[in-house]
Image (cartoon, rainbow, N blue to C red; front, side):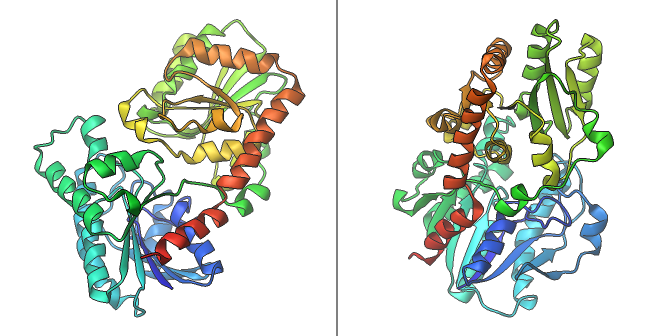
Length: 406
């Protein structure tokens, strides 16, 4: 098949992290398909703006073509320019036929930007191609529940129209959120159209990681029981829970927390650590994707959390969870993700109530009290489950079946 994947926020490792659709494209090519990924030239997720600006409009990456559409530059997720970029990207999809001569057999259009679906539907009709719609964030519901937007807001109302239309018109619908189908059915989706395809990991990335620089590695304490976090420092990540737990463990010199990443709340967290005089919290700069496993191997356990919000009842699929699993580390899972309880189901760690510092402390102490062999067995269970269920080469075959259907 000739497959077009439309995701405004897709990237290559040169400009950001690559991610879900980069891996899907690469593995679909290995399965014998011709793949084109269509994305915006840059977004607030871009890590190298110079590389974004200099990258060609059409580039061949690991056997597939990566097409970049110019949209206005912005750096904040909350910028009004982002909304303009959604509209322009959707409109400019009509120009893709001039950049890619081959006609697609199937088009996969991925959210969160809903407006791009309208451009994808236009292209699907033009080429008489099958259309699959992918939901990775449930918009506009996320903006309503987390952002406080009114359902009467014109932009929200337009998004709601597009979401409902996509469920009706698309041949298939996929999502990385396992329970999202219930929401979709309530908006008019035929349940038979739905397939859950979670996020995952690339075997190549995790089995040959780059080493941390020596001066960076020295910032991570040794001879302590280390609980680590890698990822975004955002409001939803509930990192204040770690600080609160560290305060409760302030007198335990044998336990420390290490937070690696970047994001809007990083400075506030650093300031709070200083104000509280915490010597058991170490906040470090983000590392590139190829070094994450090298950092994780230094930890005794890993923490992942989200704030308490009913929106997560649809399930979650954070990339850091799969990084933790394949690292073979016990996981403390502070997310209320409804019936989706991967850490508990895999026997890979402990579930705790979100934003509950004393439960985090209890989980840390329980893990510390275990023998090294017991912790290793727990981590190995998670690692085995990750290889069986979340390797991208396996997930690409599942996606292939969806794209070939109907």
